[in-house]
Structures are given as structure tokens and as C-alpha cells.
Length: 329
Image 1 (tube, rainbow, N blue to C red):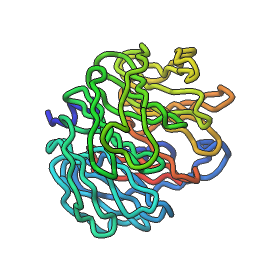
Image 2: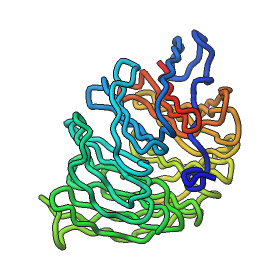
Image 3: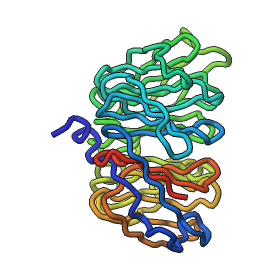
Image 4: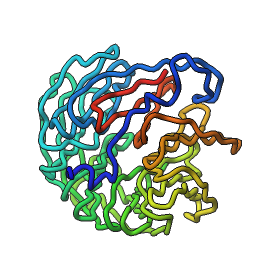
């Protein structure tokens, strides 16, 4: 069995079966036609980010050890980046990519135009999640194999490390970016970590990770997402067939939503606010609207990761096993 399958629990699978071509579906909160575009890419596409103008997509290919650039629904460039690239983030100017390279235990900073590696920073074992702060003063890397998160200054590349729960997969920042929220798959909890940051460039003793709270959730939490106002944290419990809703002003689980088999990832629409919940273990995506109305949309295969464009007009998925990218418009 491939290493990525063990670490991710499931391969990423195409969302292309979400709707038939031209079918009417309320996937973006209003009735509109959904046009399916499928792009063939190299082995095991994993994570994806878009340029600030939305015209360019950057993709990590874990199996091929490459980055892929997509424009106008076509692959325009690929370049080797290292052994098993996983999570990725892009800066506000769109000129730098931050790429976790799993088998090399490093974070690489890549020129987005040339795809040349500008810097490599050692992190923990098998980095998988990458989050860049909005002010770009720091980047967070989540490392699954040694149960750590790394707060790295982008000014000095100093690293402050904290041990969290067992097998952390992904982390996100709270809306005010004062807290780091980490899903720990093997200890059934979300770690809430306080970020202690002085003003200016982060260096020496002026930035720290401080344990704050641990929240018990369902079985095998994986994906995390925040509501648009940041008041609710959604946690997909892969082993529990549920999504927990945590109120962020007191960090209490105040709702549990039953979903499909093996929910893995949660995407929040950037305008209307519906949730899309992927279910690895069944051929359905759960759609949960802000008013609580729900529907379940059949897909061809199990879905893991789902992303919305900034304007909410498109959704993107990667097909880890089928080497495809789906663009849903």
C-alpha cells in the first residue's frame, strides 16, 4: 500500500460525477447550470492553490514529485519539486509558493513563475498541511508522523515547534489569526493553540506557540473549516460519519450533524455559506445550507478534498487515484 494512502486514509477522487453535464443543481446556493471540465495531470494530484487573480492553478503531484501549473483548463508547465509534495499555500502577490515535501521533511519556497526552489526549511516528519498567515509574517506546517506543528517566521526562517495530538493532519487559523486549530486524527481531538506574536518581524523570543485548549470531537477528525464569520468551526470526523460544530467563543461542541460514510473534507462557500462535505466511504457529497436545509448529491466515486474559488463561482477537486483535476462551474 502506498505511503500516501496510509497517511491520508483515502486517495483524492474526482468530483466530476457530482452532476450530469448541464443538469440543474443548487450547488452554489442558486439554481444555475454546472459545467464539468476534467483535466488530466501527472501522478497523484493532492493539493491546489490559485493565483490572486484566479487565472492560474498550482497543483502538487505527490506521486510524480512535481508541481503542475494549469491555465485556461490546460496544463502549461510541470517541474520537479521533491519526493511526495503534499500541502501548499501561495502568498498575496502570487509570486511564491510554500510547499510541504513529505518524504524530505522540509518546507520549500518556490518561485511561482519559474517553479525554481528558492529555499528549503527543515520541519518535522512527513509535513502535510501548510497555512500562510494573511500578513505573511509566518507559515504553519503540520507534520503527521511526529505529532507536531511548526510556526516558521518568513523573515528569519526560525521555527517554533509544539507537540499536539496524535497524527495531526490539517491546521487552519482562526479568523483573527490568534489561534491555530489542528485536527488530530488518532486522538479524536482538535488542538487549539494560542499564537503569541510581537509586532514586526518574528525572531528570537518575540513569537511562540502556547497550548490553550483541547476539544474532544468524533472519531478520526480530518478536515477543518470555519464559517464565514469565524464563529463556528466545522470538523469532519472520518471515523464517525459526523460533522461536529464547535462554537469558537467557548470552544464547545454545540451540534453534531450526521453525514455520509467517512467524511473527510469540508468546504464553505465564500459568498452564500453552504457547506460541502465529502464522504470518502460513499458516492455522495452532503450539501448543508445556512438555513439547515440539506441535500445529498450522488457522485461517481468517493470524494475527499473540495475547494471553492474566491468568487464562489467554481469548485475544484483533485482525483488522487485517477490523475485528474475537475473544475465545476
